[in-house]
Length: 454
Image (cartoon, rainbow, N blue to C red; front, side, top):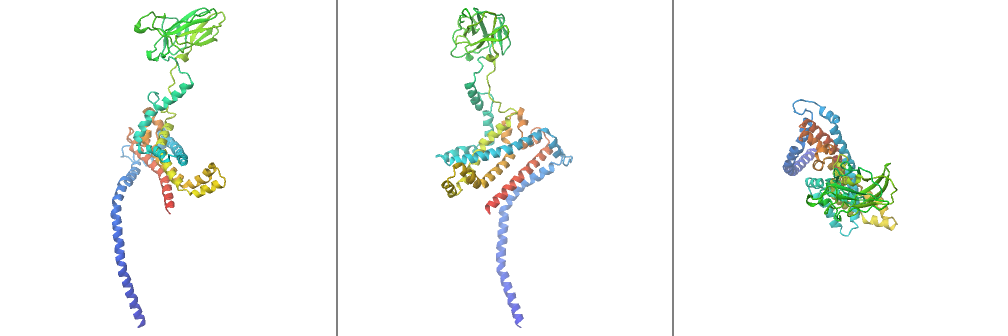
């Protein structure tokens, strides 16, 4: 009888517990259904925009350019055999190694320095502003800045200005000797007198082909210098009078001297006996010459093309130049993130180190950098992921003739698929390779975020 009562009591309690649990279960089911209803649109978009393209690209990479013939791993083998694709892989490797390291280092340096600047907020704002500029606009800006013509490219304008401050430029690159007036040579120099001269003689060296705006402002009316008993005198001038008047080979009124021309007196054995520079009126004089025959020569340096600066977008420098543009855009991003981590460092650790006599360099190396290691790692890995996908800057900045020299995997993929190659099988294989390269960095970053959240 007692066992029967105990069983009935347990059964009643179980029913009561189940009755109390049912509303909770129903509430949990409603929450799950509500959560699925909210998440479902995002999942559909994720599937349509990410999962389906990935699956389709993997499948498409197994077929030929037309998409009709199954080639298996043939497209992946073609990647290894294609020199242009291997060059793109090499450039991508350079980007991954160089750009994130430089950006992380610059960001760390600027973040530390801005802590000691009075207007730190304004400074950070200025450095972060390029992030608001699209890669298209940044590419156009730097394409113009890298122009080799100093009149258009600001970088070469600076380079040429500095170069010309330390090295004299050619005086008259377009000048050429007046034909039939006793000067021999070819365009670009050197020019020499056809007949020898002796001390006491005077020579007139007439040139044409110099534009009026290329004549120095201090140039005066041409006049020959007196030679003296032991010297040779003469004049270097523009043998063209205003209005076309005058006689070729003779200094006429209105004709200007060509100041700055380097003139040499050369012995019969080819050695230079004396060198001088034409004055404002084009006159020159050699003195102290021994008796004998000489040739008056104007070296080719007088007619060399002016220094045009650095060919930033040439085959050798195009990739470093584009990386420079990328640094301009992303340095502010790295600085702001590292600056946020720097602000979270406990100040008592820094003060304790200072009290113990540590220098600022020791504090930076042994306290600041180790404490910032998690932030630096996140910034570095994020930049690695971003660098692997870089496309806009490379495509816009690199000129057509050197596009292949600057290509990375993303640009190569686009060119092969849509930019004239019309081989979407090979392009899909490149996209799969790019995905496989990005995934490990993404997984590493996600795990680090999870550990930080824990």
